[in-house]
Image (cartoon, rainbow, N blue to C red; front, side, top):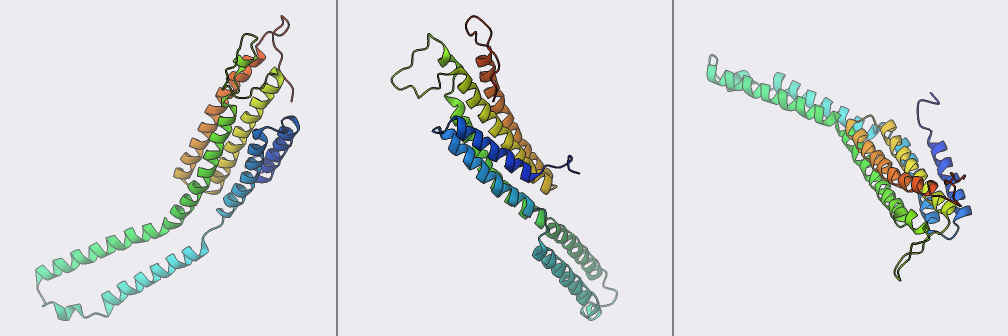
Length: 244
């Protein structure tokens, strides 16, 4: 089963190594703080996903108690209360009304029972989306950091304005910076997948897929920039891929 499920420990270790690499290459960049936040968030969400694997015992005990109480009530109503004294024998109208009321009660009891059974699923689903909200916000923060990293600034003809942000002028450093952003986005997708692994719920799986699609789409934009950087001619030769 080792290669069939995601290991939260390995995801956290990957995030920690990425933070160290960012700190070594860009010690003064804001991306270093984002990498540290990713490590912290990965630890918290890994614990949260693990906790969701366990059943909510107090809720299950409450459901069992409610079912037992409802069953005893039906038995009491059907066997103890003297309905034969309330209605006259041979009264067809009241008999039909009694049967209809009984059927309605049974239907309502079944609906209520199903609602109780799914209550644990709804509680866990709410907890998952509350934690995924923070992960989605971090994805947009990562995207903001790569937003101004434009390969066009490496051109000799590029002229910055007075309000231009601080740029990375080295092609290798710029490609590595963007690659780090792409790796962070990939890690966020794997963190989200931990919840789909812990909670077998279609709504949760759809929410995790949305997170992964968002991270993949933003990563695709980043790799378009990296491709432009690596394809730049350097000293009359095609650009070469930078090594980490």
